[in-house]
Image 1 (cartoon, rainbow, N blue to C red):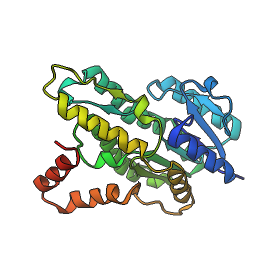
Image 2: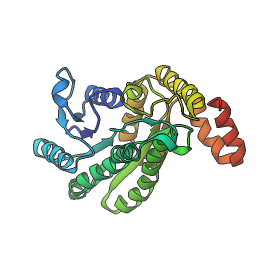
Image 3: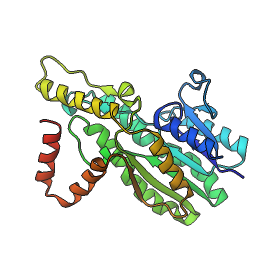
Length: 267
């Protein structure tokens, strides 16, 4: 019997690429979207789900279990970007980002654990970000939300091992998706002391996404993880230098690493 996979944020970008690829490989895939009716040409079914609304999470999980009787793999992929000087980002936008990128995945995990415990099996893959390994200028809130998910996964996976449930993180670098168009951009204000630096950094960030890798690489990496008998705690998928930046952070003195980042972002 093919494994049943649930992917949050499955209507576009990395989520859609993963869903398409796993469908081709014979998995039974269900994706989610806040507006599934907009995507009629999908290769796998989409279920309505908003990760910021717990009732929709519970309903979507219930639908999949009723249709298939099980739930083998859950991919917490839904997420949103956010950019801006931390001083100028409205508090509500910071909270909104954590609701989607941090509390949303936790609530999805809580919703699926009873079924996986009943099966005595399951795999949960949390899509984080290489940005979550370091505080990036003008992306600090995004770094914080993804870094928080990385750490909570480390704890969570130890708590669920006794039930034969596995959990892992996959941290992508820049991929050619529509994340830049969907993220919250604090406006570049004319009278802002950050105007020039933030404006330059914003153009650099957008160019990185536009020149990013093909999301199919993430799909292939996730397929390998699903087929792994003992997934690692952390995976990184992206350009060599993006992955190497994590190694440099471990071995370089803090101020030297900070200087490298500032040079990179032309600060």
